[in-house]
Amino acid sequence: LWETRIEKDLLDGNNVMVVAHANSLRGLIKYVDSISDDDIVDVSIPNGCPLVYKFERSENSKTSALRPIISPNAIGPLSGEFLEKKGALRAALARESELALHIPGYDIADASPALRSLAKLELDRRLIDLAGEPVASLDDD
Image (cartoon, rainbow, N blue to C red; front, side, top):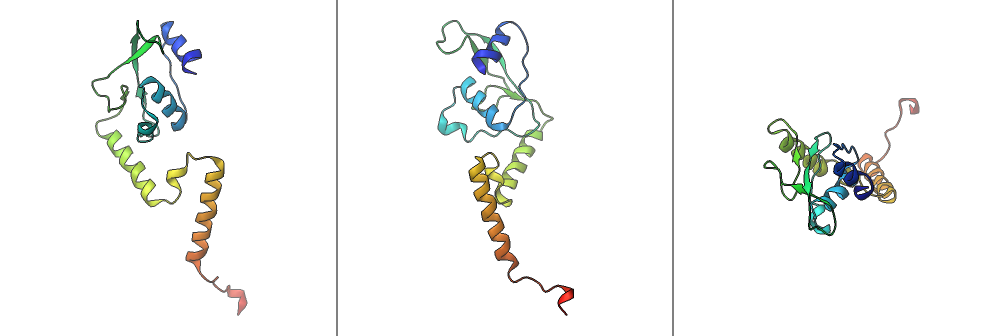
């Protein structure tokens, strides 16, 4: 996607907007910012918070004709900048962390369908365990 569409359009002088799922964006960010496999898993991408990158031509790069310009407001290891009201990004990331801690299965929302299914089965099992014995209905009198 980067080489065939995005980079080509940027080199032609066009602005490009990418709207995608967090994992797709994470893949692009990993490539653009040369982030390792181990480090990319720690990169948080909050929903609905635009991330803006600016690029310059790279004369001596073997992998890309463009390289990102590090924004003065970038949060490492990213070179792009989240567009936000002051404090909104920190609050969004805190909410994401809170949800991951307190909602079973939240942290695997981006997992494969098989893992999501297994997590759902585990959650259903926990609910059944919590419910204990079924409550008699009023009609059983």
